[in-house]
Amino acid sequence: MPTYTVVVDREDGYWSAVVNDLPGGAFAGLEFEALRDMPVGVRDALVDFFGNEDFTLEWIFAMPEDPGTRGSR
Image 1 (cartoon, rainbow, N blue to C red):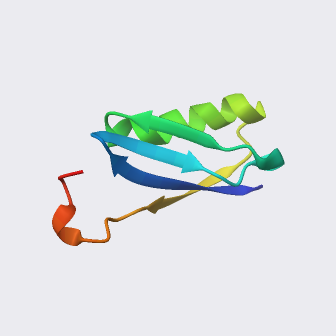
Image 2 (tube, one colour):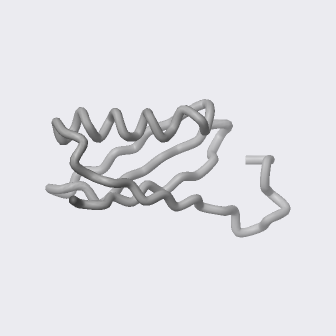
């Protein structure tokens, strides 16, 4: 079962999720207003892409270079 990496970041008031390592060079870029909606939303998008649920997800949360900027992005 393949594992895909989801990189999560906060930008312009939205949570973004990017999955770069999809077959055929495809990628998924999704935005969410609430972080709690992201796991189901990303999984649903990938199920639509693959047509099945035969994969796992690894989550990486990008942090700002300057910790003082947290919450202001």
